[in-house]
Image (cartoon, rainbow, N blue to C red):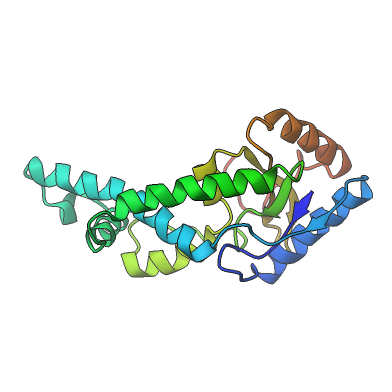
Length: 216
């Protein structure tokens, strides 16, 4: 099992997330798995720049459609959507094509990295679940951008490459909030992940655990 807690930017998650992920690594070791410390195989900042470029191209198209249909995007769409559209508009010509080419390079590099391991363990997110509204799309764009790019800095690579990944709710912080552990496998490795999830659930059951406040 490849293992790291640093995100794409080379920074560590919040202390409770780091401790939780290290606890999961120890659990896996206790179950007989070999834990291999690794570094993220891609240039995180370049990857996230490409990811944000591709991601924002969708909202840019949506804003264009709104204008074509006589709608004011600022009134019809949420700040997050219009902000991403403006982000894309600020990019130079050819930025989308360059980002997609970067994705192709990252995909091959990640496939080669993943071929060396059965699974890859990291945090899912950089912090425990946020308060309601902190990540709402109506939050001013600049504020939400700062909150999001660090918070979601472990999962996008698998979205791009297509490597299957799962969040396993194995840990809880001192406030009783769940902290997931992300396990990814090489492409086609879904069965391996399901087998591992079954083993982990037997070792550290979670079915009857709930956060202090939840909908259910």
